[in-house]
Image 1 (cartoon, rainbow, N blue to C red):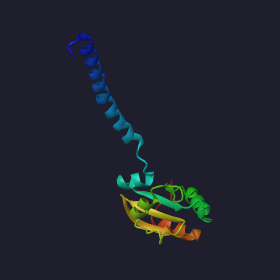
Image 2 (spheres, rainbow, N blue to C red):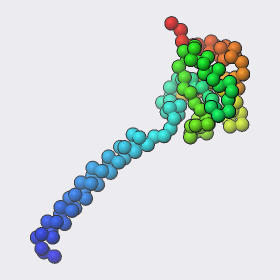
Image 3 (cartoon, one colour):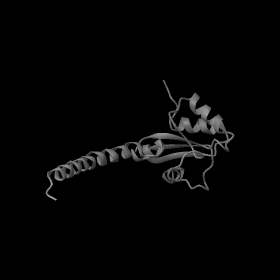
Image 4 (cartoon, rainbow, N blue to C red):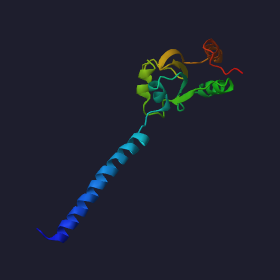
Length: 143
């Protein structure tokens, strides 16, 4: 086992293995942290304690959702559209919104201030209710 070629080959292998461990593992953690976050932008905004508006909808079952979305767009409200039929983290979002699945009535608008629910309007079936909600909280874009 004192063969110099074997020792040199072993040392090269160990150096290569050490390099892979030192470089590859931290790079792998960096990539996982950067691209592995599957939380929705709504949850990210909650954790960042932002102020924002969430438009809750269900593209599969809601007939009035398009009307509400058009109203929000025409009033130039800056909002997150959150489709509960497509998002994977909707149960966590509902928990953050302090809304149980049984009480959830679509379409809805929730106003969040600094990461805490300030007010909500669920089960919108009259565009005038939405208009009043937007005016009350000054959520319409004004020039």
